[in-house]
Length: 241
Figure (cartoon, rainbow, N blue to C red):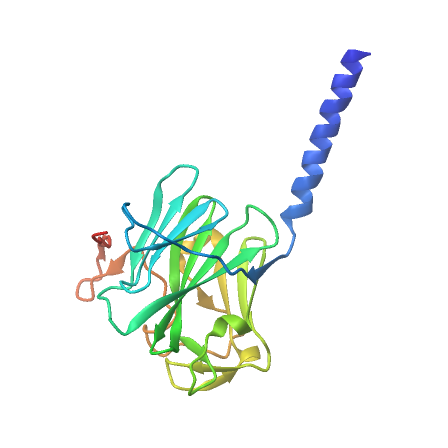
């Protein structure tokens, strides 16, 4: 009897696990803005950074220096160290976290560039499976003249590993790329989480297309020599904390 019970319990566990996997395999995951309280760091590697915790990640952000680091809580490894380049005293980072309605799915960090109270666009960082990736810059703002954040009009969803970024249909979205105003329904992006290093890209149906490399660009792993066409190894960004 005991042996039959153990076998039955084992079969039940396998069936339950299989059903759980099937129930999330094709599920459509919705994301929502989650206000996180930051903690000012001191006496550590990240002095003067604000630390935010989300899922299995600790995110350290220095708004004034425009730098960010992501640490895997489990392994204690720093999985991303990124900065916007030469800091501008007039530019600050304002972080916005989009979290999924299912556990263990990717977390999206939108680092908004704010200049004198006006939004200059969003740096997109994806945290997935214990790693973190810089996925590009969206140089859009809402309401021309005011330059408010697009995050209040943004919807993020994911299915089959592909994230879609869409906007409220009637929102007025201003492009710093070409100084045009678009309706939210005419702009959309997608991000393949399996190819996160390729970056965020406008969808085929998006009316918003780029005219140069100053807009929604990924952080490439390699660059082409313009003279020879030969591939060059990327230079890693190094910063002094």
